[in-house]
Length: 363
Image (cartoon, rainbow, N blue to C red; front, side, top):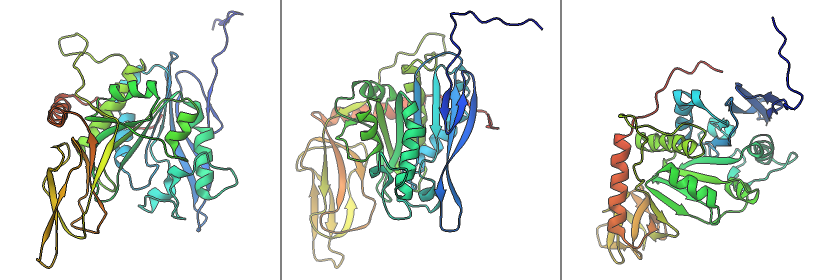
């Protein structure tokens, strides 16, 4: 065999190190990062998939189940890992299907001590289980990426229209949000201790995908998520541009609605809740969105919108208390046009051919 001599000027490729394991260009593998243990000595680990393209490019992190009952992102990632498009990967893809394994195992949003992992960043190596989990995720995984997509859902009984949330001033994140092509993009403020705030403070562009509700898989929410992640990867030039059937590159405009403010319509009193509008529907000031009725049949009270906008979240609870949030509305200047754009976005999703998949047999 001939000996391959390396040019003195050529630098050896630098490894991407995750969980103490080195990955070089072209490598693919899975790492289980140890976090701690539960009451019965069951170990807590975080499974991380690492895929490196042979050519350099961005390093994208895609994560899900930061809250253990939010399953849609887990399914999006499962399908992403089976996509044949990843064979043409440029740059690096880091994928964490379940960040919060203790909560995932208990079918809960929260950690065993009832704390919210998404308020514990940057964490601590000597803190609570959640603090240690946040610290390990941040320092062993998140800090390796250049861009990030974090996936969430609405709460139990509170489905969300597929939407992207982006931080004010995150200009690259805003471009990623548009590339994702969701029905709605919302600019929302940062929350202390959240993953998004931590990424923003470290100048790492990040978008947050919200769709569906906890404990449920919604097919459209999953399809929007998968198409969106792949579209962002194309925008970042990690994957080739999508081609039309006749051979040209796709140039269809996104029908995304952009909003910089949201508003809640709340229950004016307790009772039985009957909505009259659904997700994606246009609303205007003083428009009746539904009613809260006295369960004993004496009266009913209308729920009215205070703003122009479209419904991006709704309560499915039949009984409510005074003050409960019932309709989450993205504020827009032209609600009718926004509703039409959302409908066209849904139509484009139906036309979209999902990435081909193959059985995943491990790296």
